[in-house]
Length: 68
Image (cartoon, rainbow, N blue to C red):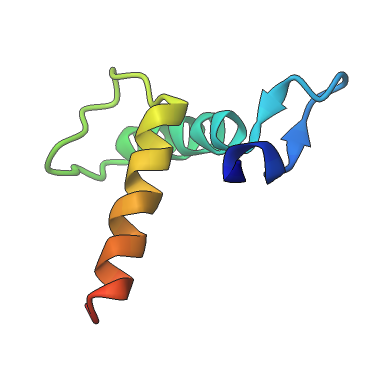
């Protein structure tokens, strides 16, 4: 139910919030890796998907709810 309540992007509202943010994260990480930043688990060649973004938000929410 909550997934349907999220905003949509694109000309025909065909892009979900998580897809939109995954594309922005992909662009940002490619730029950072190109400038010399070396993250521990991301090399710049992997595709960030909408499911990854949703899982990341779930982990952040769980951490907040447990007081972290």
